[in-house]
Image (cartoon, rainbow, N blue to C red; front, side, top):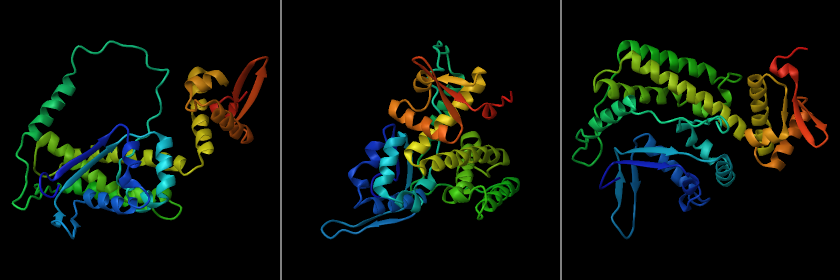
Length: 309
């Protein structure tokens, strides 16, 4: 990045290989998380060496896109302690924790063509074919984008609404590290949307409105994600099972689910973990376990699914 190309992406569908790597062990994790934070901000990082040439990384850009399984991420947290979150590393991500669609994916033929995807690819190719704005010193020198007055006013409104939620007792207090970056992420997205649609020039209100909705969605995902991740694994399992049971019963117009279906279709597939999760929910009076011979069923509290009689 310092001498050859100032734009880099770290992209992996198996992020355990990254978060579990030598560079993230207990002796290196604090230093490397700090480095990643600096690169996120487009800051300058100096590397001083005694036996070889020292150098500086400046004006560089880093993109990180990671997919990871929850147990692997928990292991990383156990290893890194509070550093990953306390350093602000995780706050810089746009988190998404989609619920499983397994069991609801019937086969369908692929469309003959994908016109919107083709349009997207053409526009991305146009942007990639533009000369990279690299200065004589090797640093990226992208064009500064301003915001239209209407877009700036919308950003200020979004920023201030987030700020209110950071107060003690506010709805964003528990994720204030993530929420404090939301307005920054929203305006970054707005710039990307605007350049994609219109090229350079002042960022329009339309771009920011779309970006703010995306940023707010990811902020809500972060609340759910960090809320569950902060729980012991067995309570997190119980929380996910509780949500799934209620959604399943409402969709299927029932209040009973066999333990077999819960294990086969639900979010907790391990038999022992499912047993632990159901015990937690029984203790909270969220469910009851009913046995009919060899058949074991989970009976959801009718009040949770809107059944009053």
